[in-house]
Length: 357
Ligand code: SF4
Ligand code: FES
Image (tube, rainbow, N blue to C red; front, side, top):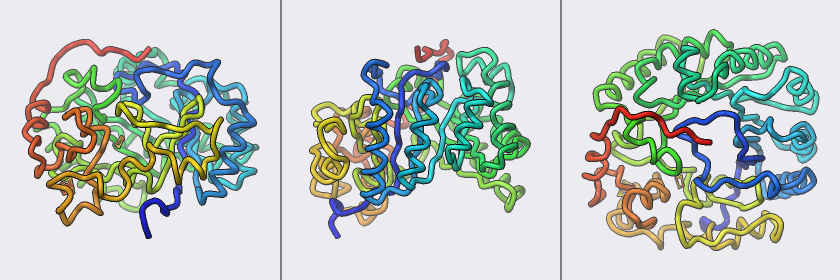
């Protein structure tokens, strides 16, 4: 089977770029879609039907903050009608109990709440929003009250990585069945804050030990998803499960991307659901075909036995660090530019966050 024939399993529906929080590691693009350019309810419903037809099983309703959409319940219902398993990815801010109940009634399956830290003061400081932590806790209680599975998503960096244990304890206290310990990905907005967010090597080493210990201690109670942060890993991650192989993202204005940061790579031609069917985009859009298979690879990836495991790493990171999206992800210790990663990881600066606004 060629890569072009792989079927996507997941669709990330970025319903809006509007968001009340200002996280310094925001993964949305530098240029945000305007509200007036957002897809309407009916177009999302068509996208979900087409996604299901393509083989997609899960839709992640995301943003920005999806609750900023007044038609969120209708969009949710359309996902259910299309037969998709729905996961709401929310900041927890802006979602009232009434709206949440309507979402549950419309068939919502799963909720993922991002929590910035285990303590209110620091969590609100990182989010750039006073009172966010309390609202997240309140929404988590609603999720459990309705009997839905809850995942806590915790993005770790220098300011909170020493509290991984507390984050897992908080997730357990909230009733989550899964906690995702994600590390900041340094592209897009997060690049502006790399010096302020980068953990030290000692912090990362300690955190790896803590996670191993927590997994043993809480085995059977909560699933702990955690990977070593990119800049300290020996091999890169198989970003998005391989470009154009497993998933697709639809931006608020309908542009279809192989990964959420793909627009940071210049020169790629993206297609829009306003002009093409999702199946057409998946099979034929130039952006999706740009890094499928291995013809595009350079050495050392091209002749590396791991190339079908990690696909040469992350294209967006390769571009962000080397200026060449076809390069081996410099996180890989075999990359000729690997030394760069060590140099960048060594730069830690005590400067104020540049908040996303
Ligand atoms: Fe992966 Fe390329 Fe490194 Fe091999 S050389 S491990 S394919 S990134
Ligand atoms: Fe784009 Fe990794 S984020 S390929």
